[in-house]
Amino acid sequence: MNYAIILAAGSGKRMGTHIPKQFLDLAGRPVLAWTLTAFDRADRIDRVVLVVRREDIDTCREQFGKKKFPKVVEVISGGAERQDSVACGLQAIPQDADVVAIHDGARACVTSEEINAVVLAASERGAAVLGTPVTDTIKRVHGDQVAKTLDRSTLRAVQTPQAFRRDVIFRAHRAARESGYLGTDDTALVERLGEAVTIVPGQADNIKITSIEDLDMGLHILEKRGDVTPTLRIGQGYDAHQLVEGRKLILGGMHIPHEKGLLGHSDADVLTHVIIDALLGALGAGDIGQLFPDTDAAYKNISSLTLLARVARILKESHAQVLNVDATVMAQRPKLSPYIKQMRENMARALDISVDLISVKATTTEHLGFVGREEGIAAQAVALIKSY
Image 1: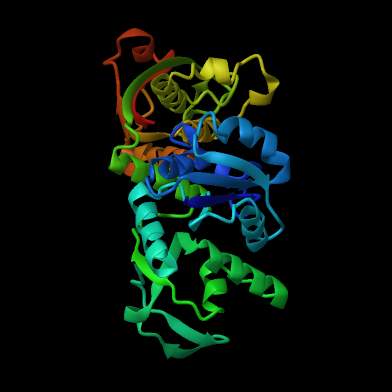
Image 2: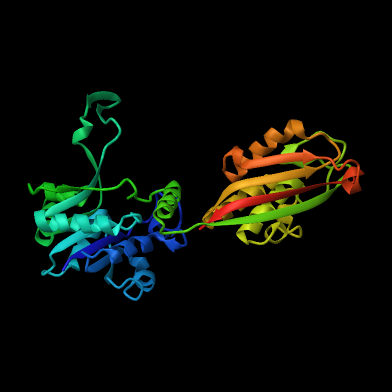
């Protein structure tokens, strides 16, 4: 009988979120759910012990317990350090267990093939760990001085799972506890016993999610494998504002010299407004009036770029990526072409995307209609997003 200990007792301080990283949403599921799915699919794992924070036990039993992940037989609380949490997990492993695999719950992109390979190697040789070749040149330093260049052909970056015969990992943790040794991983404890640890080739995709950028990388990996299928969605926006005296003319976050400006509750940036509406429409999240109503004093004279940045956060939280925005401003005057480059840069910065993904065009209406009579300015936009 082979067991796995999944460590999910971290607080997520390095992630900078109030939610621990293992519970953050990744393509519509918690990070930890992807991890447990891989272990459910691994033929060489029979049972799983999940180690979490004490305050998360009840929630985790409900979300990640046996009803949803059949191999999870225990959900227990961890300790102050990673090594303490592993020790807590080991206490739940029966004496007749064969191999114990230990894995970081935040490594959500591990594959069942990698799990099977490292467990098989541990069964045959006592201890094994996934490792990848080091591609950077590594220097040993003293202070800020290089002491030696290491031969990277002899170096490996190790990952989890790390797997051990039960007696090996129990002896290693007992020896560490008795001597007060604190290691950075479990193979370090086994090495202190003089036991050999076999390197099993791992994959660079087996990343540990420790930052928001890692979540984006995780999405890319899952998409590349076909574990998630993105949907392309299109939205469109249209808006018009009256030109009046005594207001600044703001378009695309720029103050454009003109004798009149646009009337509105916010800065009345009609160009940014239609891009907001196009993005919200693509996401199916309502419109600018619903999210930022003109009856709310909080939005009085607010910069529309601030609102666009908030929409960017909504997109990110919804695992949606902006692929393209195309907008047209309709104004008889003033001439807008000198300002378009800066408009694009302003809005790209607010959305945290490349400026190449935003197109802005300006046109007149040949003196026709309210735009041609210079009574107002209109704009329209379409947006394409990729949603998971």
